[in-house]
Image 1 (tube, rainbow, N blue to C red):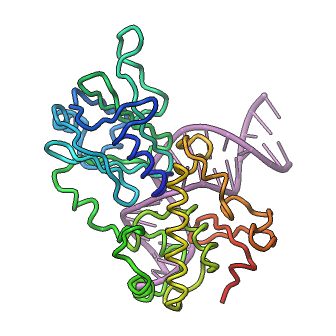
Image 2 (image 1 turned 90 degrees about the horizontal axis):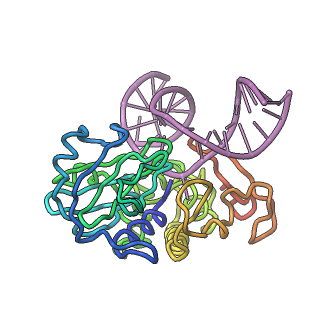
Image 3 (image 1 turned 135 degrees about the vertical axis):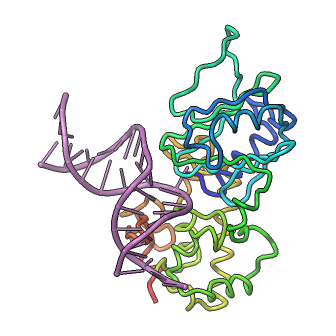
Length: 279
DNA sequence: CACGTCACCTGCGTGC
DNA sequence: TGCACGCAGGTGACGT
């Protein structure tokens, strides 16, 4: 799934529009269709459709990996998990008939004025919440890695408050909001840190390096409109600039040593064994 | 508290 | 060709 840069790209496209689509801001919901009930995290389909109808989209933002869509009464929160995607299209086809859902569409929101927001999610892991109080969903998230209020000293303190394997800690959304498997591997390589290092052992210098590397990969991901892999989210090209992720056996772009793959916390993990020597 | 395992889902690539 | 298996950008519930 989309990690922070992909979610940011998707949210920005919905908020400001793009070459082939308009912004959804200011649009009023005409009706919704729920094609897979479990996509709704906190409501049943009938209640969701009744409650969202008539509300107007005020903005589209992001918090961690959540797409945050404030409406006139409630807020729609969407988490894309592994395979989710959001697209905007015309609600009616060329003949004026309601457009048929695409394969794996789970939720459709039609607006007055003829636009449709479609939540497509092959693996059905994605979730949507409609709530008047976003805190009940977002409260558990850690800080935003790109928030300037976070600095090396604070980050060092956060890391040292635990003694956990570095990679699973970075991917824990309660610790820091937005990193997933790809950007974590890329950031650890950028910081020359092994994913299994104990977070409690990092020095201030290492914490500062790690925070800078996290921001560098996230900012580059955003600048390139995210990564597009296989059938999941298309649009960005950051996948062409990975330095370790998916490159097992290929030379490290820094030192030439073959990249190796290991498993950390059940997730495929890619490192340069020379640049990221353990201990 | 930290870590491992499994569950939730569908689809693709690989090897027999 | 068929089929089993491993793998996939995430998260949460358990058990140890």
